[in-house]
Length: 86
Image 1 (cartoon, rainbow, N blue to C red):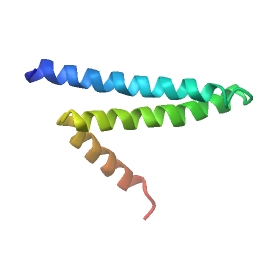
Image 2 (image 1 turned 120 degrees about the horizontal axis):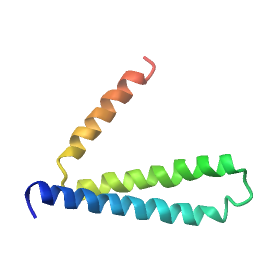
Image 3 (image 1 turned 120 degrees about the vertical axis):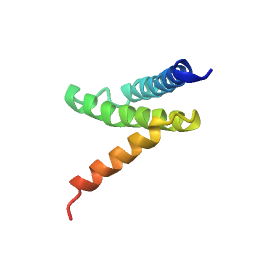
Image 4 (image 1 turned 60 degrees about the vertical axis):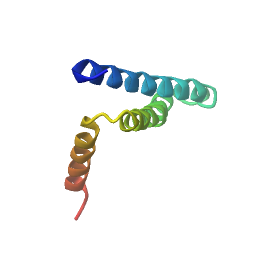
């Protein structure tokens, strides 16, 4: 599929992949984190499952050749370079 519809389908698929990865990791982490406080558990789930879900999204968009990924990566790099100490 080409054009805007194809782009939307590929981006949607990448989002589903990211969601499945994040949900799967949150489910796997539920057992080992069961004895922790709700705040610590939520923080760790967000950092681990959310972070790896985000990486899965970026990987999927790269594999699907979505043109916006390069722009997103450049913007993130530019932003991070400005907040790093000199």
